[in-house]
Image (cartoon, rainbow, N blue to C red; front, side):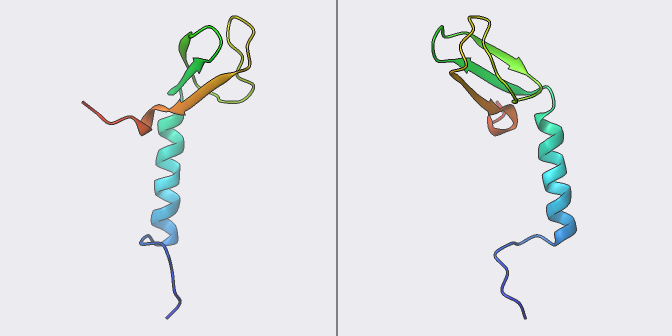
Length: 67
């Protein structure tokens, strides 16, 4: 029996990853380290704040607990 570090079948893992990708659509929280602006985006590529800074932290919103 092969040793596997995953508790998911390949199909279950693919569905889980797809669900995370769907959750990220339009749900990425951004925060500018220079001007303290906070906003939401749907794509974490080439993040630039309105102030022109590229020093932007970002986190997918699915990582925040409900409630």
